[in-house]
Image 1 (cartoon, rainbow, N blue to C red):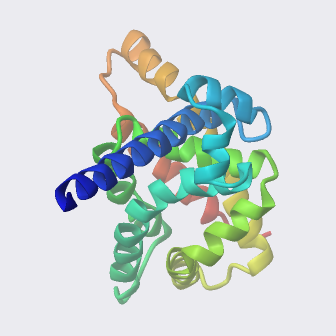
Image 2: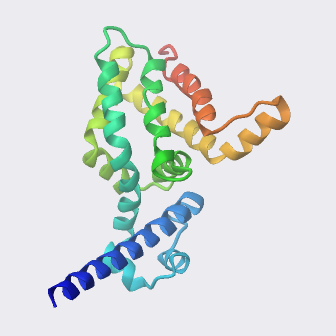
Image 3: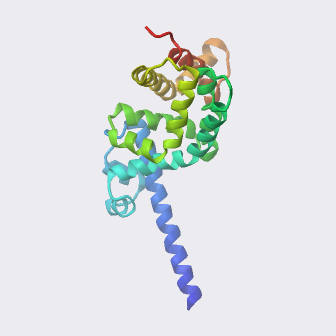
Length: 222
């Protein structure tokens, strides 16, 4: 009798987790393509082939679903990225190129976590800004403060003259550049091959954009 009970509990747990992951996968795909504001719960339930009650049961609201989609990536990315930033901050001298290059390996590791994970994550992150999802920015900065704090510390060490206001503008422009590049990465890879006979992948695109954004943040103060 006990074995049957345990089997039923495990079976039900697996079913619930399968349903939850189906919702997360559907939401992630739609959010990346259509944005957070442009995606309805009805579209998510339709693609996930579940009912609205399942979304409410597992997440409670659309905001909580958005947080859960981002958390899947941040829980993987945050420890690696924080460690990478801590390591470079220990250097005696530091350049902004080194600061931004610290993102490369942690970001690319998301492709091991999920197919096309790097590009998907960066598009989702960009949506959080372009769709004016203030609660998501608050969530990320409060849930993963180690990444933000160590990144700011690294930038300040590399460019101590940069004011908080100027850092805001330059990082905002950086985010726009990265998001646009990632959203059009497939087209860029095709152009590199057809126009320049260069075989590129997402890693190559990131390694191209890093020196560009680092140079922008490093521009002289007016």
